[in-house]
Length: 443
Image (cartoon, rainbow, N blue to C red; front, side, top):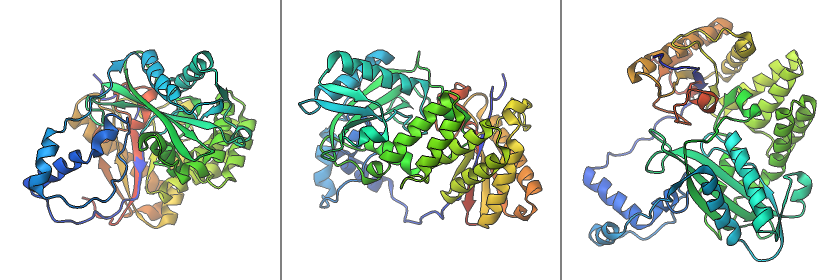
């Protein structure tokens, strides 16, 4: 069996010095955990469907003896049942629209995403279509409109959602057993979250392949605009205010959505114009915009412009301390995939990454990642060797980087998708990351 059947990506990401704190004893840790459970901080991972918990409000300290009894008695909320995909969509959507405000309302759907990567997939697109159909048939007092700058002028209700593979404890770690599904409806007139629905779906039969623009995107990082969207779904409850970061990015998001649709339809000039327009909005400094501009220039055979645009992609990732690049390797090898349709731009990518890394003046850690397929020990070694290969290529293109790069390999310990399908749906798990670090000493 090959170590991995498709590819591995490498992320280059700057790191921050680790915070120092006194070690916590086992007894203290247990009491702290019980106090957190008593405060209901883990509800987001169960009843609310949140991917990440919102920061708790400050509360008066409770003596350990008094806190222990109610914490022990409180049982964690039951997880939603794991349903077939269509049933899970209907369950979450019915929860939202049956509890939405009375009266007639226009609704726009800000395309649903994976709750970790922020990618739009065939599955999340399908959810949007199913929700729109359900609203039309069962909730005629709502009218679903296209997500455009013009429709936002009417201050409609905005539907957002995440669809994320999780383990048996509803967490994004370890072997994935289901999809956690969250839908949230926000009212732009009141600035409040007005409805929420959560569900879980079976893994079987779900096409999580990213749509074309995300499948083609060369790089990834945790983008503030995408994070604001995800937190709007996962870290809120009914009655909460809609986050300012999400609201400030809505205009740009509507333009990016139109640009993505144009790119997916092979309308590259129209896509480029829309990505350029999105870049000029207040929230235009985001990776989806830079990836889209690069891809559109490349598809239009505007090579000089594409090279410059990829430099912007690399610069953005390094500025945000994490640049994950989807380099495709030959199975079980440290050599790039030989098909020029796939790897033909790798030389340009490496040159631009080297240029931007040299400009930063930082030490850079190059870390290889793999999917869970195959032997963990062999995958860890292979991920290190691939990172080392990328390091050598960068030093060849930018000699000034010598003694400024270190390598690391973590195998499948830090998967983002985690389904282990080894296809386009989890390509980000086989990445190479670039990360600025405090010291160039090889650990």
